[in-house]
Length: 290
Image (cartoon, rainbow, N blue to C red; front, side, top):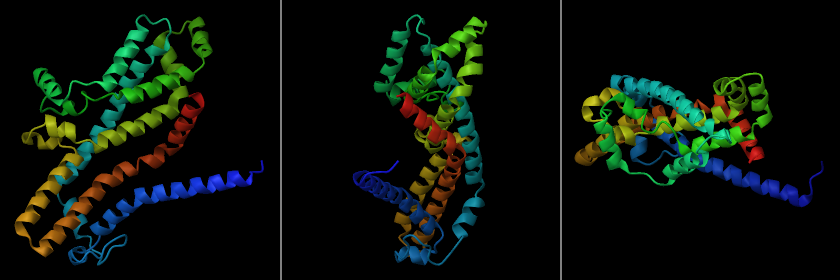
C-alpha cells in the first residue's frame, strides 16, 4: 500500500511527538542515575546533568550495606507479587459474573461498583474501619483494602464481553459449569488483558506508600515498603542537610538519595520487558473490541 504525501507527513509528525515524549520521560531518570554515580564535589558545583562526573559507587555500596533497605526491598517484592495475584483473583471473580445477561440484579451490581469509583468515604472512615476490624498495624492492611481497582475491573469486564457467547453456550451444552467455563475458556483467551492488568497492579503496588504511611505505625518498620522507607530517608536527609549546612555533607546525602531512588525504580522497570508482548496485544485487542 502506497502512502500519500499527507499521510507520510502525519506519520513524521507523530514520530517527532513520540520522540519528545520519550525524552521527557527518560531524561529525568538519566539525570538521577548520573547524580547517583557522581562524587559530592561535582554535585555541589552543579556539573552533573546526564553523564556522571567523578565516578563514585560509594552511595550504592552504602545502600547495599544497609540491612534495613535490603530487607525492605525484598519485602516490597514479595508484597508486590502477593498483591498482583490477589488483585487479579478479585478482579476476575468480580468481572466474570457480570458477563451473564441473566444474572439477577446485574444492573444494580454494575451501578454500585461504578459508584464506588467516583465516590469514596475518605481516609478517616477507612482508618476507623480498619481499626475496628483489627487490620490496623498489620501487614494484610497493605493488601486487602485496595486489592481491586474498579477501572481495571471494567477493563477486564469489557474484554470478557468481547469473547463470543457461542463459546460459553457450547460449553454449557456439554455440561460445563460457570467455574469450568471461566478456567477453560475465558482465562486462556484473556492472557493479554491479564498481563496488562498485572502490570498495572504491580506498578501501583510497588510505588504505593500512602497506605503504609497512614495505616502502619513506626513499630511496624519490618512491614514498611521500599517507597515509604525512601520517603522517610529523603525527609531525614533533607532535615540533616538543613541542620548541618555543610557543602560536602549535602553532596554526599544528595548522592545517597539518588542511589536509593535508583534502587527503588530499577526493579519495577525490569518487569515491563517480560510483559511487553502481552501488554501491546492487550491494548490492541482492547482497541479493536471497543
